[in-house]
Length: 252
Length: 205
Image (cartoon, rainbow over all chains, first blue to last red; front, side, top):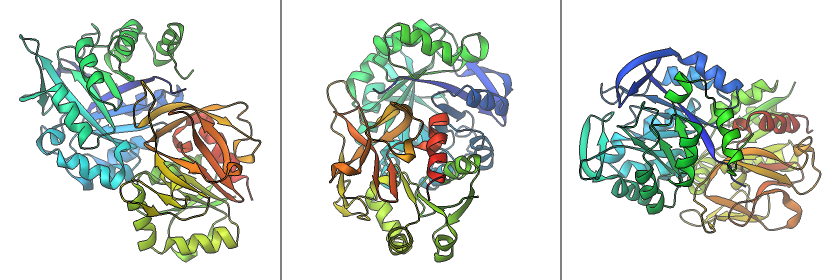
């Protein structure tokens, strides 16, 4: 049977591992290479690397840096930040990324999703959707590291991404990010019900129970977490043990 | 020491395959020219991407002919991984119907999800051996490997089915015919179990 994935997310600025709250107040949390080595040793299910300032600063992905990281990763690796062209994707896959995570460009020019899929297959495209919950309960897409509000809702964007051939959706609630207060379950449930591709829950994980809720109430297929693993004693392995006790299928 | 040719035909994560094979103690060469095939004790056909794009790239570089010469005639062991496994089939239905390498009888068709299943099939799932085979030696009743795909290999002959995996009603996750092998999952990304399978492949001769 297919197992639920627990995915540590590593956010970085230059070569430093950082973590913020609500896509802001970034603080350094250590060496990126060190974390990669630890996660590799611990055999985590999959890693997500996101360069949080590349698009905002108009930079392309740092291919050399990814190449160095990927050399330490014997696990699936999804890489995002600054991807604007199919050529960027080709180069990232060539240096060892298994998937690319696209966000701003997927919104601005959804045809790139189909273009990447045609060349490299749907399985390598993760469309990342960042959003905030409005006062009226609406969930609007935000691009450029959460700095620009867009008119589309998360469900509209998720459906568009699926239509264009995306392989997975990574859904991040910006207000929840870094708060350790739990995922936005209604947002997850809405998107999971609207698409047939896997949905990765992101933003807000603070405990194993939160992960369980994202999977059972939010119907997510995988859970991503950063702060919870950086700032608490909790680990991906213990998370899986907890989920197994709750009757979920995990790889132990 | 094994000298492994990882066929370079511009289809995806070739560097992870190189690193995994080197970790297993192999010398890795990367390329598609005659002298690369000539030097290889083992050949890996990696690849992510679409079936038609994969075949078009193989043809453009004149690779099918070299695979026939070295793998079919000289019997150098070949491992196809993910798209590389699918290209071993006679044909694929992804996008437009496309002829494959035709090394193992069968067709590549879409996975059909049952209720609650999502496509692509992404993540860790159990590879269950259906017969004793050197490639899966030491795996016991099964091991978890990393998958990411939307199509699967429908074998033309039950003898080529080496292992199956439970998703979409069950699909073939490892194929074999003589010295030719294919895994739908990514051994180079499947940590301890994957490394074991790659080492098993390197010990084939």
